[in-house]
Amino acid sequence: MRKLKYAILGLINRKPMTGYDLMIEFDKALASFWHAKHSQIYPELKKLTNENLITYETVIQGEKLEKKVYTITEKGKQELRKWILRDEPLEPTPKDVFRLRAYFIELMTKDEIIQQFTAQLEKHQKKLAVLQSAMKNLLETKDISNVISEEFGDYIVLKGAIMREQAYVDWLNECLAAVRKSDQK
Amino acid sequence: MRKLKYAILGLINRKPMTGYDLMIEFDKALASFWHAKHSQIYPELKKLTNENLITYETVIQGEKLEKKVYTITEKGKQELRKWILRDEPLEPTPKDVFRLRAYFIELMTKDEIIQQFTAQLEKHQKKLAVLQSAMKNLLETKDISNVISEEFGDYIVLKGAIMREQAYVDWLNECLAAVRKSDQK
DNA sequence: ATTATACATGTAAACATTGACATGTTTCAA
DNA sequence: TTGAAACATGTCAATGTTTACATGTATAAT
Image (cartoon, rainbow over all chains, first blue to last red; front, side, top):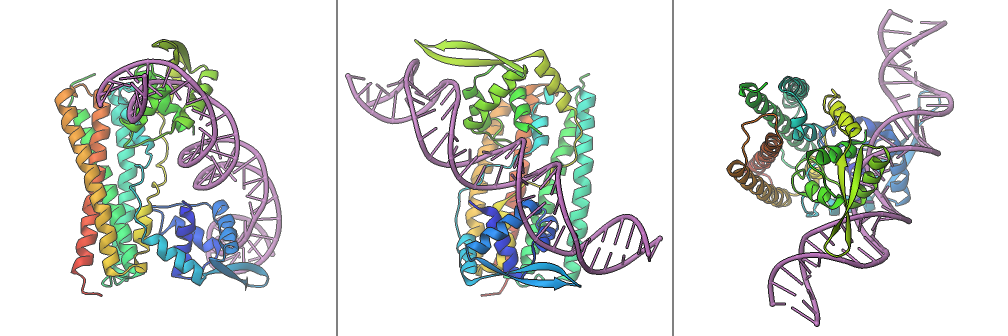
């Protein structure tokens, strides 16, 4: 499927970047739906260069530090455009270790269940708060009135991330309520 | 992390099973938060056997078809119990190809955006309907009053899957509404 | 009887991803 | 000025996952 290929192609299409820049984008803008380590990014950039989907220009930073600024080629743009319009079947549901633990709830005592779910709830609430503040910032600094724009892309994935986290928090709260009101040990 | 290890251990702990049974469980009961192909399951069963976490008994099905029914050992139970109580940091958000496409929305025209989001919405609505009917069935056939039971485990993960799908559907609807009401090409 | 589907178990190559190893420069604050 | 953090690029081994290869039995319907 080469999904990383398209993630990189899409980012470089937005604007020319180095491998390091890509790494930062994966950790910031794309963090709520994608991730890649630099050890995966650099070899993929080499591959994409060999396939003539991107090219690079070496730029000197300061005195002698070399960096490679990658730009998408026409061929790259064509492939990216073809990919974005593909209609593929729904992916299998993503793996979720906490749900796996939750499924085997019979292995815990009531106190342990409450402790596990509370800890998870706190983590997701924190994450939700971060996303909400990112949204506040986005709405203050960016114009999202144009639906066919990078800004609108930024907006909808952030909105989606918030709704997903909210659903997770709601679920954890419902589980906790059900467990707390039960009259078992 | 050996997550598959614990998924298998947890399932075999619920009741003795063959590799084939596990495969079916991954596709049915665990489908909303885990998956594994038989090509991954059989080698892992061998590994767990070598580690003395499970043992098997060969059973003849019909005339000569041999199947291996695996049972968890005391050691296996101990490791499983230790795992379920671990407090680990939040996993990175799962990858989602549709969100990746959505992020690069600037590559599409308004009509293409509507077409893409509508297709995705239909798929998630179908999935949601399947989950809801599974829930209806679960509530009719199982007693979930005991919070420390396999049935309650089945219930909460199904509930979580429904809430997650509902959030996805809501998100897609919001995106579509925003795109439709915009007055661009 | 035949045939399709489900049951049943494996291996091997390719691909995707992570974690560790490896190195060096630049910038900014104390 | 010195030290930490950020900038910058790579490789390699191990692990995780998918796809394809490979084989055979049992069961239920036609």
